[in-house]
Length: 98
Image (tube, rainbow, N blue to C red; front, side):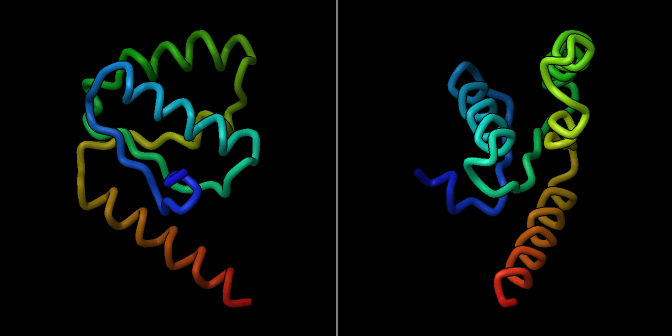
């Protein structure tokens, strides 16, 4: 329920629950059940294997599109995350005022 009101998601290294939430958010955005928002994966080394698999298997197998893959942003920089979510929030807020 809270995902509907999110301005962004930040995923830290975690287990199955983390992956469940990540793929749930991606699926809801992909199927246009919720409005898009930034999804950040913190810790590039931790997420590298998953990202490689998504590129090599899902993207190459045409199970997802390049646009779907672009929903994910990987970083080690908390400032990049904060700035990206703030930009999204300001853009979203400006669109709602029209």
